[in-house]
Length: 401
Image (tube, rainbow, N blue to C red; front, top):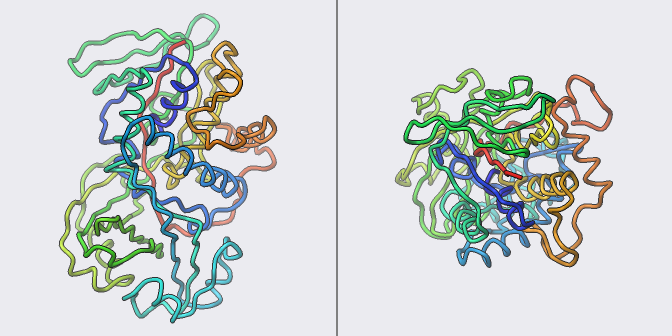
C-alpha cells in the first residue's frame, strides 16, 4: 500500500519519502495477490470499492510496467469458489455475479478437484497478480524513476505535532541506530497491522496468517480456487501459492506453527488432492490489519496533516489502486498547488474517468476511521462474510510538503 501511494503522489508531482522498518513486512511481499471482490463474498461499500479498484487495475499495472520496464504478472485467471451444496452456493452473498457450476463444470474448470465439492461458482471477472515476485519490484523501480526517496530499516517511533496539534514531523530511528526528526506537514500512515502503535485510537488489530508455496507442473491449474479456509493461487510457472490461516489470538507472535501448517496441508488435500505430492518451495507468515467490519481506514485522521491508508485486512492488493487514487485526491485537495495539470493522468489512472468528487466523498465517508464511534449510515454491512483469504500489512509512507 505504501508503494502504491508513493507512486501515485510522485506521479502528481509530490516529493515523497518512504520510511520502511522492514521491507519483508509489507503486504505485497506476504499476500497471495488475489483480485477477488466477488469470490471473497464482499458486500456493501466494500464490494463497490473492490469492484471500482478491479476496474482500474489493468490500466494501473500497464502504467507501472511502462514506468519500470518490468512485468507485474497480472492474470485475469478467474476464480472458482466450491461449495458442498446448492443451497450454500445460492446463498453466497455475491452469487448473482458468478456463473453456477455443477460437478461436471467444476471438474472442467479445476481438473482433479476434491470429491467433497458437488457445485461451485466461477467468477471470471476476478483474477490475480504475482505481487511477491513481480509487482512489488516493478513498483519500487517505478517509484525510484519518479524520484521517490527510500529509507529502508527506518522505524518511526512517534508523531510530532505543533502547538495547534497539527503534524509537524516524525521521530525515527535509522538502520544504523541514529534517532532523527524528519520534518513534514503531511504524511500517509500505511503501516498495516502496526498502524495503531503510532495512533492508538485506531480500531485496528492484527490477524496472523501462515502460507506456503508448492511447485507444480506448468498449467496444472489455470483458475484460482477459493475454498473455505484455504485458497490455491497458481502462477504462470506452475508455482502454487497456498493460504492462509486466520489466527487473531496470535497477536504479533512471529513464526510458523505445526498446527498452522497442518491446516494448510488439510486444505490442499481437500481442494486438489494431487497437489499434496508437489514439493514445497517456501513457507512464511504475516499479519493482516483488521478492523471490526473488515473494511479499511481511509482519509483524514485525528491529526491534521496525517492521512490514513490502512486496515485493508484480506484485500490490500486488490484495493491498492483505488486507495492510492483516493489518497492522492485527498492530498491534492488539501494542498491545491500540487494537483496534476489538466490532461495529465494520475499514476493510477487507467486512461478513463477517475472517481467523481461525489464518489470520493462517499468512499471516504464510508471508510473514515471513527465510523465505529459515530455509526454513520452507509458503512459496512454487519453480516458475517466467509473467511476465505488473507491480505497483510504495508509500509509507512511519508509525503513531505
